[in-house]
Length: 398
Image (cartoon, rainbow, N blue to C red):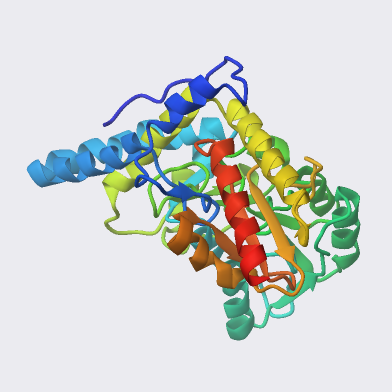
């Protein structure tokens, strides 16, 4: 269970190498006949990750004292630095949390925001990401300002221009997604540069980015980055992280630890008390699995699969593709579409009940749309199966 994390795979693997990706798929234990196209909601960990969690709890049952020491040491000496290295960060910049939402709560509450201070964000943020800001508004009088980002998007330039126009002298934090729930890829590096030029902190909701494409936090230049590792990274449910840039940690006050304990680095932002050690330790197992494939290979695989899906959707009458086919403003793995006059969220259960297809709805940005997540264990045959069912439902119900 407590394994060393393999270095990233240096080999280039073709996105359509059937033999290789079939072998990868064999490590997943999805019920026979089911097709999982909802990874953006909750990832499907490979068998080795699930086994790692179980083995950890068995270790705690057999010898609690030894297990607690062993697991805690592994998390400190292998998991945290391994994850930091994967993210292009220092281990002292990574706090381990339960999910992106918890990390975003920390960002809002650890900052010294005063009445009248403004958090600038967009209309495309996930509702749970806005909740900590709304609570801070209610209790301490800060202001939330949302810039309207159109859906579908036009260009990366459009996003930068709109965010630039939204900054005022009261803006303290610019908060936005790396990849939105609707599958739009934002020009993060340009936005963090804009924030820095205007003297504003940058905080990123990266729940839909880590594990689907390379992310170098140091290169991005952000101040904060929140993620749920149980999505595309395929770690156990209830795992995430918060990145806090080293240079601003003295200004970012922990809710749990005294300012005198700055030597702890970002670990000072982690909640206190007993936590599920085996679950957190299995982050290392998930990263080991990911590294053996290689994040570059994963990104290429996801692009190939989403391109295949988009091409199929484009050929179906009545369907409007909301996710752009241009890779600079679209997620590698999430695709959104709607059908005029159809409440697609009501079809989600039909796909599952009638065809064992796991899909998700998308009801933000004024859409009654559907979201399809195509992670690397998905095949083109799975996608074709979904498209066939969609055509059938359109003929029957639309």
